[in-house]
Image (cartoon, rainbow, N blue to C red; front, side):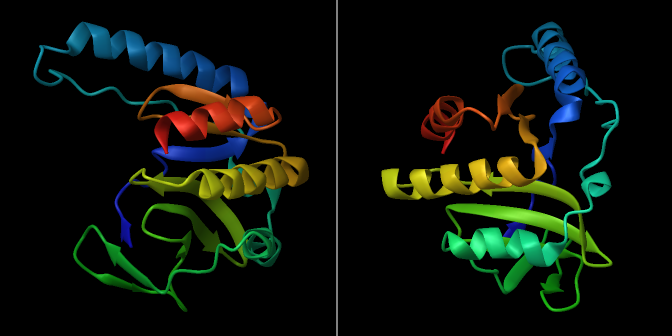
Length: 171
């Protein structure tokens, strides 16, 4: 696995909903102004999230148990974009799943600091259902949303319909 999309599709506390919704709107407006038909002529920088995932004090063991219950095991080979392999036993970055879809965490002192997902698409309907159940389970435990900065879409994880629509459309 490659750690390329750090927090590009992040899973964060629901308490950030209105802030990230505003940021997504600003990013879309910025993109419209700075797209020249081929690429973007400027970069947009988002504000920091007010309520960080680390503040939820999610124990990595609890998080891993949810994933394991749904067939997502820890990935042991992670290639960092800087050109190095991350030792999965010692590194702060952890990944779970497979090359089509994976959950990523940054862990310090056994607490999840950041949580994000990556996917190259092509997931089966069965896999989408599995991912959906994981997201709903995590939401039930921790009250979370997905902030997808690739699409500037904010997905509430308390709605199975919204989660399924999002996953089917993009993954």
